[in-house]
Length: 406
Image (cartoon, rainbow, N blue to C red; front, side, top):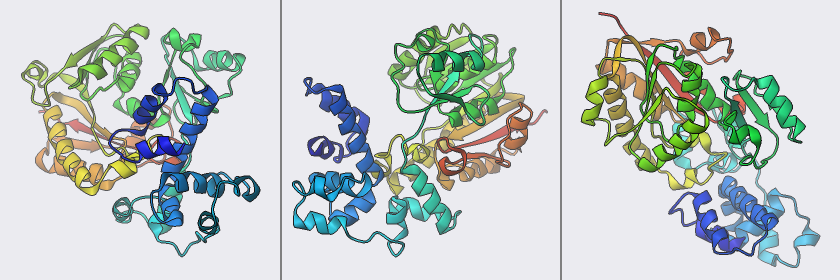
């Protein structure tokens, strides 16, 4: 475990990629051992600040042993053979409310400082505590292939604990981390893995069957698939991305979903000349912008150590540029939807405010009302703002801007 953690703590790559490579170099390792190592490594990352405080550094062995004893609750008797006197002393150290807020919330100080601009300390603590928990596994049904009731029955019939998600009418939440790759519902394209928060962003786009829709930063196609399904497989849906590899993954999923209305396009950036043919024609443009990913820290806890305030500053410049470029495609009466999986204000309302200052032809629509029209009740206000501690899903932000006629 310490060896795997030592490689992850270099923070040169995402933790899951590092672990995948580590396991490939140890082919004789059993599934149970791989699971134990992965859970421990991610547990250390989720509780990293407290563990560093208790151990006095980033020694992988000390971090692992202190995590297992302090967080996982392995008894002193079980651990005495492995922990030395100094380790024992650290484990017994106090971690009470007199500790700095960043350690209590287990977030870097730069993130705490940004959150403190909009949240009181007790809210930051609640948010930080929720981010220390593993995320649930959410699925989304393909409504053109199956109903949620039937999908729930089939999942439960195969021995899985499944419940409807509280907000998304297409969502299913599974208990544990079952392998789904060979499940018939997955192989037939009847369900896809998608966090409930991401599903709600798709509903906020509210595409219609006759629409021309652009998913400007489609990535591997999670939201694209939902938009295509909400359009009933009709209309025109363009899935744009700069990475061929991501679009290839999206294409595999699009084919599995039998969506013939989706056209993947690789572009060379937000100002690619091929976008000119779509200028002023789109009914809906979704900009799921590249961001800090702080809303996904339950899934990707290494992000809080791989990101930085300087990195976020670079991202905000990119977000503004992408949003402005995407706005060119929206026709009068059409809508531009800006979304991130970030918790940070400067990536969310601040970007929308900057955009509106230079694009007065776009009016902000109330997200809560748009979702209510579709039978979805989320107390969010003018923006869609989702938080793990309040909504049980990943952190998401979204704003809907409508281009005025004439």
